[in-house]
Length: 90
Image 1 (cartoon, helix red, strand yellow):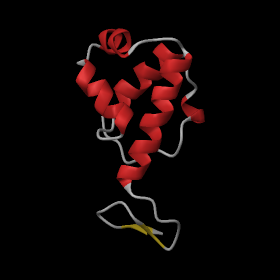
Image 2 (tube, one colour):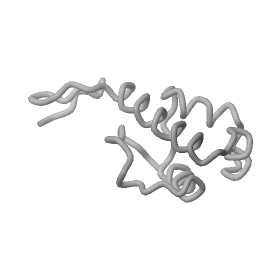
Image 3 (spheres, one colour):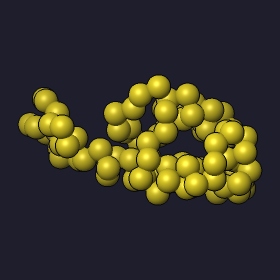
């Protein structure tokens, strides 16, 4: 299978990078809420602006690998339980 620049996989299921980012963001938001943590607290612990965390949770922005790793630690979230990830960089 090959991937087009818009994130659509050719020869398989078509899911755009944006859709994957939205699913990831929703999963992270649900985990944060389940942990009983507010956005401000999590953003402060990540040392990022609340607006950035909000964009990640809405699927507008994909976190870096290091941010996602720290977020999993804060939320006590097993990274293997996360949905399929969009292309990410560090």
